[in-house]
Amino acid sequence: MPEQKDNDQSDEAKRTERFKELALRYSRYYKGKVDTFPKVPVRQLNDFSIWYTPGVAAVSLEIAKNRDLSFELTGRWNSIAILTDGTRVLGLGNVGPEAAMAVMEGKALIFNYLGAVNAIPIPVRAQDREQFISVATALEPSFGGFNLEDIESPKCFYIQEKLQKALTIPVWHDDQLGTACITLAGMINSLRVVGKKISDARVVLMGSGAANIATARLIIAAGVRPGNLIMVDSRGVIDNERKDLDGMMVNNPWKYELALATNSDRIRGEAANAFKGADVVLSASRQGPGTIKEEWISSMNRDAVVFALANPVPEIWPREAIGAGARVVATGRSDFPNQINNSLVFPGVFRGALDARASGVNVDIMLAASTQIADFVKEPGPEKIVPTMEEWELYPSVASAVAFRASELGFARKSGSRESFYRTAHEKIEENRKMYRRMLEEKYIRELPGGDVNE
Amino acid sequence: MSEDFEVRKMREGDVAQVIDMIRRLKLLNQEFDPTFQVAEPPVEEVSDSLHEAMKQEKQHILLVADTGGRAVGIVKADIHDRIHYLPRQEARITEFYVMPEFRRKNLGRKLISELYRELRKREITMVSAEFPSLNLIALGFYKGLGYRDLVSVYGRHLD
Image 1 (tube, rainbow over the protein chains, first blue to last red):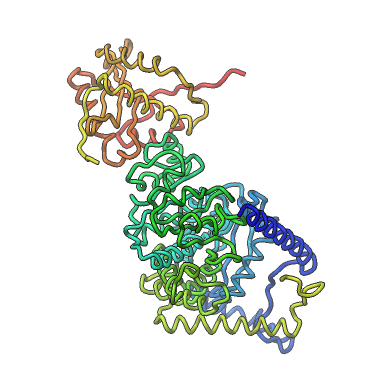
Image 2: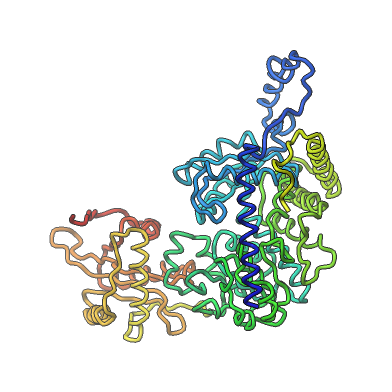
């Protein structure tokens, strides 16, 4: 076993190094991953009199009379901004907005490829959270939604809450909400596999960063009893008498609220104590292996569910977790079964939010997305609790669930049936894929330098 | 967990819990302003000062919020003589804390009203509260009770 672990780690490290090398090489070659390109015909230069002045003045005047027409007469209906201040980029920390651009371009690529969303990466140099909010607010008229990305915690909660309240477009912080949605979807199916009810489940949240705080809030909305939820951070189990609770109240009120509401059994001390008798562990913690110990898993309830989501090395290797008694194991990696991956969520969520011209997203819409992702898996099993990225029908189905729920809740500027939203999303994604394939075939998108070596 | 609270005078058996609460209060002050860097005084020292205050009933009022025999909130007020002003006596709240899980149950206000009752019995009609200027939670709490800024104490560390 130890030998196998070493091999896993060394293979993974080699793969990661190879990806990094290719990313640098290709970035030098392509100089950016996304671009804007005209989508209207220019038959002759005189056509600019339609698309630009003087003709375009009529369009401006119409929008000036009714600002919502910006969703009908310009590209706003399908455009979102990916906003970041670059303070917590991947696992790299505060690398700044310029360095964050490479990552945001990658996100924009996924938005386009999987959800046909025109996502514009906008890393921002902001001195503080208020300046960031002010920049985002000023950008609202140009976009149908904002995806916040890689902003440090707990600043991200403050920014998201303020913007959600102030703006009339959806504001989604993917590190929180996307992760929470796919984690809940995976948890719903895991509990189906082991035949336990969500209302009875004892859940440990290992790690109390942005993702797990958002996950805690969402799974409570989904039916987990707050008292049955135990949060663990780097200092151990969080209970409502821990000495640092007042510091938490001042510096991270979102975590503080959960600390007061959860852990009704008053479990205290080290992380191991939280695992005893738990049904589910959702870990977004320090890289492993060894962050979660096998004996902790063994102390859990029968048919334990373990999500070890640290990347690239999970908190415990799946085989160890299963050996210690876990029935369902998920990680953040594509080379193990059950990859908990935000990319299964955000393309569909934004496709749906844009198709409905939603004015916001809330926990009900997130629940609709999670439930749809869970239900998309027709026969959940220990090695199949979430769809994979190749299951293309997933994205329009999530989009339709989101759009329909938004219209039910009165958040949508456009209403429709679930089927009609599905058709709209499906057509848009298909059309985009066809166009992209065509551009590849016609070599308008240049081939990889040195051939296709991304194997 | 019982939701029944009683506000009563602090007793010998409350000392350990009160020491814990006062320490939490000081740590909270430190969160707001690092100038209030929390020292680690020996428990006996804090315990002695509390015992002393309990003995000197004329100079100090110590009330606790009790649930199931456990002190989960504390208010301590010191009585000062005012030579130059009227009224001649003032009660100053110097320690005030409610354990996190018992907050939002109106316990803080209950402690304060019991303190007022005790002050009225003693015919003391002036009350003030002392807390670090940057402790926004205390500021909000007392403003909500109708307190206003009375005295400013400025300070700095010597180089």
